[in-house]
Image (cartoon, rainbow, N blue to C red):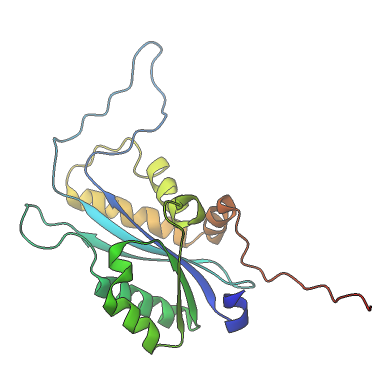
Length: 204
């Protein structure tokens, strides 16, 4: 495996958006009465999170993330991550991990810009691998979003965008401090970052 040969961290990236309307989850309620969570009307107050799940055998798994607050009105600036935002997040991960990175992510157009390709070509500590199209089941960061939506974000009536931001950050920090949760997200993909021993050929 490339990561094992380089002594690198295997790093998966994904991004997701979160708004004022919370994800619905199972909860308790009185018999015969459907629980209702009253929330504010439609709002442009949203956050995007780009996150990295980082794995290397013998090391605690890491979660590194970068939030982005959306503008409150249409036409007031870019709401999505630019390729430079991804570059800065990867550089931050390289500094924190103090090791080469094999970055695995999807085929988002921003991931495949000329600037991103050039940056990877100019830095030997970074190797980029594209996931197959429409294969979220191979990305453990999808499990991070699931933990957030089934946990701290579920059924919450957010009072304002600051409340949403605090809840997101608190939930992500909770996961950061529990490498077993990050490992579980990788386990769900069926992938194994550990190098597999080779068996010598039998003498002919």
